Length: 66
Image (tube, rainbow, N blue to C red; front, side, top):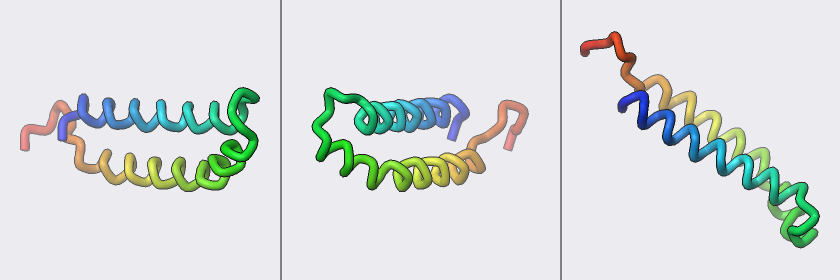
């Protein structure tokens, strides 16, 4: 996997986290929906962070020729 692909995946994950935080703490969102999103917020952050750490190990460095 190339570094650019990793950055795209990381950017999408970061955007998802921003949307989750907005859904949790914006008064426009229905209170029932806010509570449901809060239940899964930590899970989404942890799973995404773990996945990014594992994917990062597969990213080829620019100096690496193999």
